[in-house]
Image (cartoon, rainbow, N blue to C red; front, top):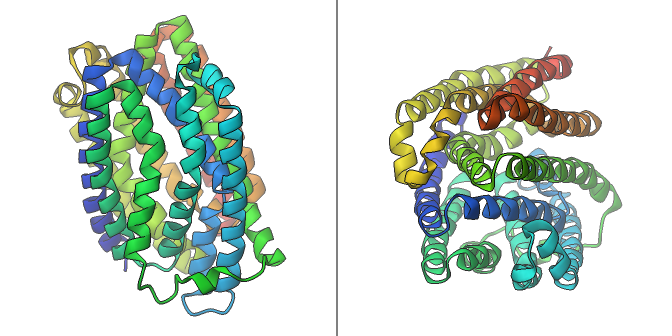
Length: 414
């Protein structure tokens, strides 16, 4: 399956996921407001960090090596068995930490111990999320795109129904409960879809831990955990800075703008993770690699530009559709945020080479450097220009990131 077909199928899945997210987001903005949206953003950053650690940070590696080895290869059971042992160990440890330290985490992350019970629930359900993501990573590596996307569609529909009901019934508490319990149900849907799979069977996960496979996966663990630490933590600091120096409503407006970017870019990033990572991982010829990158730029970049222009032209309607009248303040944030989004995807097409070619040290250095620079640029531009300075910082940071990617990956491409 080529990039165009994969992009089309992921567009279907992403559209359904976006519709689900739109309904959920509208309910949150009406019932909770800008400050509540900022709090949910804080929780999402914490949960993103927790979920990555609980998975052991190995899922990108599982996808890469599953694709690289091939569907019928002998090392696959060793790879999957080692991956499952890492995942189970990490998720159990993280679950226990969440339960034992729930009050402290709630007070530190959400500024109140009122949500202690949320983190206790999270601790009990995190293992289901971890196993779910491991199985999806294997499917992605096997390039079973239709099954992969069908599962994602099912999970999005469930999330829409379940989360909306909880938000309408319990408000902010309902939103948080849904976020930590969704994984228990979606895991059941994955098991059901894979019940007759010829390769993803229990016997292929029962081998002893293989040290060689474990070392390969742990190099990806280092990269994933770096991203999990740097990106959410930088956002936590930025959101706190906005809340303390401007207002928590302003933090909510920035969260809403970030949410819009994340939603429409999901069309592209899903295609990249679904098609690009396995494809780049299996390519050994530089000529073939350049051809694949060229195809990516010819297909992906025009899509992002068209989407960004459409969102900018429809920004008033989008704010009305997704949020409430209170969020009209964020209209000024669109221009430079959308420019930053375009540059971001242009740079990401190159940065995926670091994952595909196991460039662990370089990846970690760039993740730490550019998360720190985004945070520092944000503080600087907020002080100079107020909330709109966030979008200046975002765009400038990705321009610098793009030129850095050109320098870093030129040896791999040429």
